[in-house]
Length: 263
Length: 238
Image (cartoon, rainbow over all chains, first blue to last red; front, side):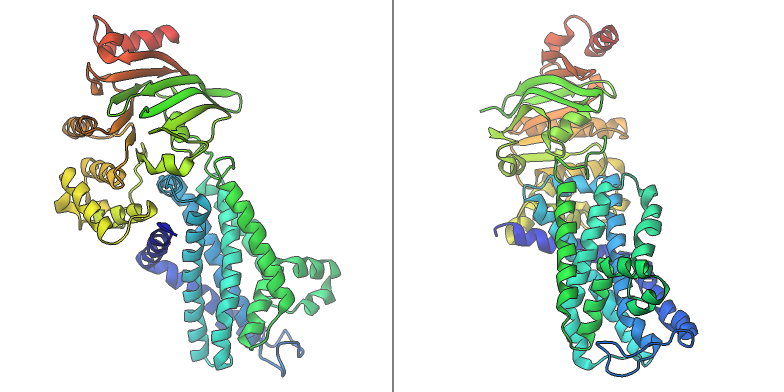
């Protein structure tokens, strides 16, 4: 592993420094889910009745229900944010620096992914702490059990960001990602409403939501927060992570499209 | 063993040919200027030499290592200064260098020593703690050259490194890189400015995807100035 570890430390440190330098990014990453939790959920708690579904063993408030989905939202937005920063790196030229290192390209990109995921998880815990301060708390051990689930979900969504960055040609095209990736992924999932609620409206939408890897990432986190293991959700999330990572690595290979930009 | 060997290199962007059967060698420790007007194919050649792109045809060797067969060994011998600035402006000079050194597997005391050495060599040791954002264009370029030398490369590629610099900074950087060649580093210096090429430099003129001339600069220019010879060649070819 000669040379691999220094590169990992350097790339993760750089991601962390970049995050510290962009304090507004941290604030925005926290404000977004908090608005959903404290405003949206408060407004909708009366409108959306929830039945008792696993992992819950009793009725829960709507605010409690959407906490795992909002954790997923933080990971999703951060995955896309890291995609944005990769496109920025490519336009600014610093991506060339990374890709001309003698270390294997897959390792360098994995280091990027690990760094971005670690920062996402920190933000999720900051959000969970604020939610707990507002009285929306999970079982104490659930916060520990959620860590591997957050890591798997974060890696999957980070890999999706990596993949998108290899196909998006210009920074300006990133707005399309909001419309065609983030919003559909978030709204067509179990983040805001359980899937059986969706089935009441449309079986087709329910089936699409059930196929959405983000749904499984959210359910993995939800179950872990209540100290329960959701095997199918883990399987789907890991599968999606593998597919996205493989495609992203191909996209960034010299034969792929990720860096084949004129200049 | 050659410093750089390029043989029959061909690359196109769709129907537009960017490099068409380009071949040349650069001896170890030689300063080779790659002169060509804008759009000649210099940046494409650099992207192929640094393995950012892969050519469908042709062969590249860096310090004796075939770039296609042994890319990691070849890239480990290569220092690169890209045309586009690639410093992280929010990091200090030392942090920028430290990040790059880690990408080349350098760590601990060895990394710190190498950083000190290259900072001294490029006369920017007093800037080490300054953020890259506060540096002027000349010092930013020096920092990028220092960074490219951190892993003691056998071959240094510079893609139009003086773009946007004032005359004094251009002269200082051109002198310094010639000094590196005198110390044994193989240099490939891409430029579109004939006045950066010295009479004894090795010269390859690239125009419209092909090599127009290859030899010592004073042989290529003949009785006229290199600037005049270059303009005559590229206008004839046009």
